[in-house]
Length: 589
Image (tube, one colour):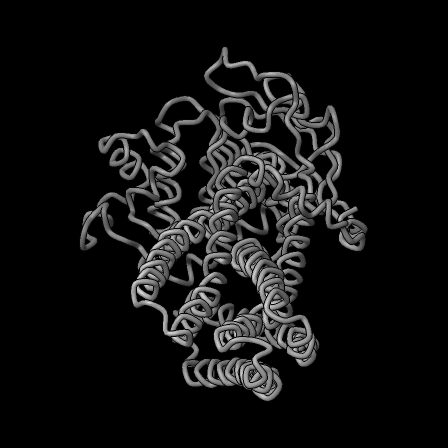
């Protein structure tokens, strides 16, 4: 459905519907801004007429009082223009920034509501481009693009009207070269658009390479790849420079071309207009005013191509944003509320089968499980479906009706957060934010006190390590916790999960970087705490032996289940795993 949607090009009306609410809300601000802009243009176009009167007064040797009045009038116009120019910039350009902020917030909110399938189809770089480059293009189109379009239209219309009032024949003669400027500007603007797209693409590559290298800095150092990374960055930087130079060539042609065409018009006016002055067909003041208006026409003619370029870029970006916003989550809120009568949360999987989107084989087959207030271990070979089951339990993917019950209610009939608010999740990646240790732990429970944060850290056996950091709990840990070891990151993630105090704790191999003894201590504390359902995904036999029940998955199916002793006696896979780990421990001794 998404691919077909992307192939269908939205109409201009459909695109503008995306920004219509903001225009409606700020219509008074926009109207006042446009009014101020139009008044500024008209006032500026009055100045040549005032100059005409002044020059004609000098030619006729009129009284100096008249000249002084004209000078005061020009000063008043200049002061008014300054004030109104500030007003239209504040109102129109300010609105474009508000529009940019509004759409960015909508994109961010929309992304957060999407399911896991959405993120499998859309890379982080692509989503960031929507919130940066695309929004900048939209902001420019509705900001400076609107200003340039209105400004050039008013200037062009009123200036030509004033020129016609001076002399029709001279006006027609003056306008002959100007369409050449509009045509050439439009041609060059099209090339400028194409080349600027290349600049943005090269900048995107450069930014993505920088992000990747910095986020993987320890890997780069471990494999001594600094020189290679530097050379690759240098090559990308040179490509970016070359792309910018190509843009510079077009920009370098536009200004001389506009000057040349403008001077051709002025040259013709000097020749024919000068003769008219000598023949007293027009006055010297008329001649000066006419030349001034001709200079004023150069900008509107140049703006035609620029506005077209801005509009095309803005509408293209708006189309990309609209296609993003049209993508719908497959996870929908149901009408019912979950029961909160019991402290724990009962979870039942009834003949559950699951296949990832676009996958040819199911990840899970006919899973029947009931999780109560006990400790469970999930284990099996790599790719057996452990993480897939974990994602289903967290409701990251949709399931068919009747396959997943929460407190005896089908999850498809509940709100999305009804189940998620019952589960604390520790993932394999131990995702941390570039923030303080304290803020990372209390993510998910912003109201937690200092004592509660410390207690959660103690239970996760990370308090002593945090205390040894330079600023303790207020230490900034860098991107993805780059300052911490793998085990420290996992234990901070565990402390975060414990602080939420939810009845179900789901740990997806979240203690793999912790040594066996520390892992044993942590799990002992977890079992001694309040009654809750604890589900641990792990292949460590010593950890699994501490759980009440162990579930073995194989090829997406439940291969066996039971206690540690039961599986040691009756399951060959579990026996093999236990034997291999025992041999590894003996080798270390």
